Amino acid sequence: HFGGEDDVLGPFADAADAPRAALRFHARLADMCARHAKSAKLGKLGAPVAGLALDVGCAVGGASFELSRRFRRVVGADDSKACVAAASLMKHRGRLRYAARAEGDIAEKLEAIVPAHVDRERVDFRVVADVS
Image (tube, rainbow, N blue to C red; front, side, top):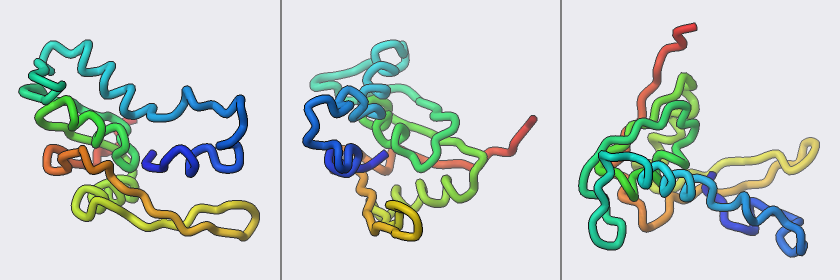
């Protein structure tokens, strides 16, 4: 969600056929939502002037933070307490260190960083109950 091109593509970053079209998915999703939402009346330079976005299944908040570039308020909701806790830490700290399994028992230490252009105060996260 939060990695740069080299982090996401890993050893394939230099490959000519690397799936670069898959990068920045959350930013592209937020832009698409804003284009189609009547409540996201965009001002100059795409500045959000109105609207509420609900990110259902927000996981660790990648799309929620990107939606905040286009909407005045965003609520990220997920049924995973662990995901909402991580997203909330990202909101308050702007970054979160974590370990990702590289292969087998080998873990790689990484840091997720909310992009500087995101106003984290526009985003709130909530745990929702499973209603199934």
